Amino acid sequence: MKNTKYPGLIISFLIILCGAFFIVRWLRTPAPGGLEIRNPYEEKVEGLKLPEQTGKKAVSGGLTGGKGAPSAEKGSWPQFRGPGRDGLSSETGLIKKIPAAGLPVLWSVKTGEGYAGAVINRGRVYLIDYDQENKEDSIRCLSFKNGEEIWKFNYPQKIKRNHGMSRTVPAVNDKYLVALGPMCQVTCLKADSGELVWKKDLVKEYGTKVPEWYAGQCPLIEEDLVILAPGGKEVLMTALDLATGRARWSAKNPGDYKMTHSSVSVLDFPKERQYIYCATKGVVSVSAKTGEILWLDETWKINIANVPAPVIVDKDKLLFTGGYDSGARYVQVTKEADKYGLKELFRVKASVFSSQQHTPVYYQGNFYGIIQDGQLACIDTSGKQLWKSGPEKKFGLGPFLIADGMLLALNDTSGYLYFAEAENSGYNETGKAKVFQGHEAWAPMALADGKLLLKDLTELVCVKVKQ
Image (cartoon, rainbow, N blue to C red; front, side, top):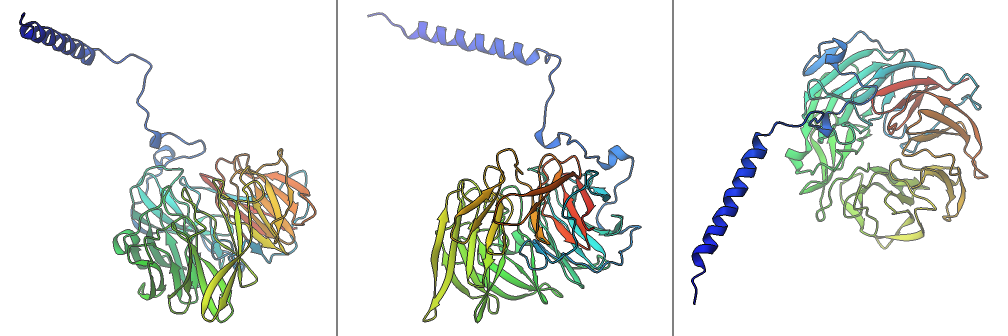
C-alpha cells in the first residue's frame, strides 16, 4: 500500500504559497484611476449651502441672538396640524383661484436637511433645524415678517443623514416652546427669548428607542403641561410641567410599546378626556387627568413606519391610516359598565384610502388625504371612496391642509402648490403656483394671517395666499 501523506502535504503547501504570492501582488498594485470612495452620508444635496461654502463662520452651542424682530401679526399656528391639531384653519378671505402670475413668495430661508415643519405664534416662526457644520440640533426663531433670525438655540448632536435629519414640529404657547430633536432630546425654551428652561434626553431617562429615520413625534402642549410618548421601558406616556420639566403623571408601559413616528391625538370622550397614541404594538388610550391606561388595541399596528396620527371625529370615533398597504380603519369608542370597547365601522384597502406620511383631514363629513399611489382622495364615513385626483395629478408624500373651503396640497418633488375645492363631488382644481424648486417637500404646512409656510429638504418659504 502506497503512502499518500507526504505528496498531499506538498500540494497543500504549494497552493498556500501561490495564494500568498497573488495576495501580496494585489495589495501592492496601485488603485486604478477614475475611481473614488463614496460615503452616502456626505453626498451634496442640490440647493444646500453649508457654512464653509458661504464663507460664514458657524457659531457653536447655546443661545445666539440675531437681527430679526417679531412682526405685529397676531395669528397663530402653534402646533402640529394647527390650533385644533386637525389640519383645519379658520382663515378666511383666501385666494380661491391662483392667478397666472402665481403667488407672491414673501421670503425664503435656507435650512439644514430635514422635514421639520414650522409653527407660528405672536409674529414669530419656530422650527427645529440641524447645523451640519457644528453637528448640532438648532432650534430657530425667525421673524414672521421677513424670515430674519431672532435667535437660535443649539446643542451638540452628532447624527448621519438618514432621509434628512430633523422631522418634528415643535409646540408653542405665549410662554414656552417645546421641541423634540431627531435623537429624542426634548428642549423647553422661553418662547420670546430662547432661554433654556429645561432639557431631557428620553433615551437616557426613559430608555426610549430612537425610531428608524429618527424621531417624528410632535409634542402636544395642554395648558401648563407638555404631553410626550417616550415609549420607554417603564413609561409609555408622560405629562411634564412646562415650568419645571417634572412629571405630573406617567402612564406605565403595558408591555414593550415603543415610540413610533406618530403623534398623540386628543379625544374628548364624554366625561373622560383621552390621549390616543399609535405605538409599535398597537393603539393606547391614556386618561388626560390621571395617566391611567384606559384601553389598548393591538389590531392596528404598522411594522415598518407608523406615521399619521389618529384622526378624531365627533368625540368618540377614530380613523387610523398608514402606508405599506395598511389601508385605513375607522372605529367608535364605546363604554359600558366602566369597560371600554372599540366598534369597527369600516376597514378599507390602501387603494381606497391610506396615508404613508401625513395625517388625513376630516372636513364636513368626509376624509381627505393622499393615498398610497400619490393621488389625493376623498372618502365618506362609510368608507366609500368619493373621488381621486387622477393618475396625472399626484402629490407623492407632500403635505396638505384645508382652509376657507379650499384644499391646499403641495407636490413633494415639483415645488408646485395646488388649490382645489374641498368638496365631495370630485377633484376640482382651481390653480397651481410654483413656490420653490422642491425636493422632498414633506414638512407639514403652517398657515396664519394669510401667509402659508412651506418647506422642502433645504428651504423654508413664506407664501401669501390671502386676497
